[in-house]
Figure 1 (spheres, rainbow, N blue to C red):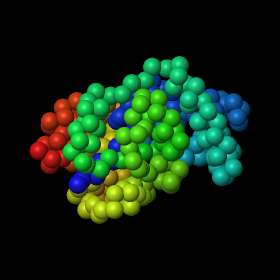
Figure 2: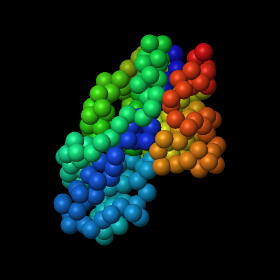
Figure 3: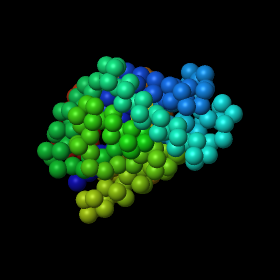
Figure 4: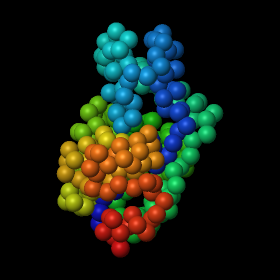
Length: 225
Ligand SMILES: [Mg+2]
C-alpha cells in the first residue's frame, strides 16, 4: 500500500477566490483592517501563518487569541463566500481518487487549510469523506512540519508503516514540493494552481504534471501499473 497526500487549493479544487475573500473580509470586519492581501504570500502557506502575517502587517500582535478570533471569523465567511462563488473540482481528480480507492491505496490530506476550513471546502464539493486522515494548518503554522504528522496519522489509522519512497505529496506550489522534501516523500507537482509548469519545474519535483486528468499516466508514475 502506498500513501497519497493531497493539497487542496489549486490541486483538488479551486474555490474561485472564496478563501482569499473570506480572509480579507474577516480581517476587515473583525479588526478594521484595510487589507487586500497583496503583500501576503497566500499560496501554499498555512492558514495560521497567513493570519499571523496579516495581523503583524497591520501592527497587531499575532497572539493565540487574535489568531483564533481571526480564524473563527474566516470560517464563518468562508462558508458564505463558497456558496456565492463558483469553484470547481479540478480535472481528473474524481477519477484519480476513485481508482486509488478501488486499488486499496491510502488517501489523505496535507494542506495549509485549518481542518475545519478543509472540511468546509471539500464538503461543498462532496469529497470530504474521501479522505480518512490528514495534517492541517492548525497542526502547525510551518507547513514543512505537516508531512510527518500526516504520515503518523495514516499509520495509526491504517495500522501500517509507510516508507518515504511510498509516500506521494501532490500539490500545486513550490511550498508543496518543499513540504515533500522536508520528510523525504515523493514530490508530485501539478500546474493547476497559480504556478506554471515552468515555474514548478525550477523547484525540481520528482513528477511534474499539467493537471491530474491522465489517470493512466499518473498510475504509471506512482508505480501502480
Ligand atoms: Mg495549493
